[in-house]
Amino acid sequence: MKTRYSFGGDEHIFVEMDEEMSLDAFFKSLSMTEAVRAANIAGVTEVCPANASFQVKFDPDRIAPDALLAELQALEHAAEAGEKRIRTRIIEVPVFYRDPWTHDTLMRFRERHQDPSGTDLDYAARINGYATVDDFITAHHASPWFVSMVGFVAGLPFLYQLVDRDKQIQVPKYLRPRTDTPKQTIGHGGCFACIYSVRGAGGYQMFGITPVPIYDPTQTVAHLRDFMVFFRPGDIVKWKPIDAAEYDAITADVAAGRYEPRIREVTFDLDAFKADMDGTNARLMEALYGV
Image (cartoon, rainbow, N blue to C red):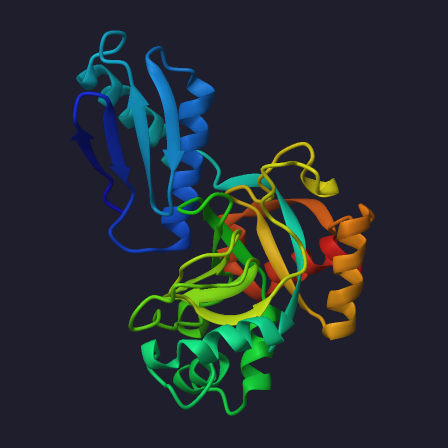
């Protein structure tokens, strides 16, 4: 990877880990942003992480741009030499695939889609080489996903599938964006999955919906009372397929303040994952479910 540094005006420096999206680039960006925060560099006022990049805001009256650049380059060298390992969380996210709400929405916007005659799941299954939609759904939820970034829309996670590159789901966005997407839709665009944290415009293919709120600025949802945003960069997500009755039951539990997401603390080692992806994913599932 070739890191590129560029200044934006007098108060920002943009750091790009690589031109290509990859788990290595996401991991390096995550390590670097954590290192910058931990270094507590005088004059740095904000660190904003993205997928394979991040931006630093600084006060030029407290630290010269060249001095900050030297600090960041030193942290990069240290990150490259250190262990590629993080302590993080694995989180179960229930998904109602083929739900009526996203289906109604996708049908209203068929003229903006690559395949107006089918659904988003039909299209995604076909272009990824799956014989049936059920086979595609199984591939979607069988392996865990890495949260590479949280943002763009408040609380919205971008997720990258933890499988070989040639097995990753790839689906283009709509030809033209929609003006409506249901809140908590599970979407996909390019190599990324996402969860729409709020209702609004969008362009990702819609595969289903989760009953679990992931963003609550009022902080009245029980599992979001400590922090209004559910996900953090580096989290690992395991989709769990549910039916309509399970969706309704979880929705009722959320409303009553009874719902507690299944979350377990885990260690994720990038080198170990690259050496044995199936084994690493099996260990993550064991940590989440205890079997």
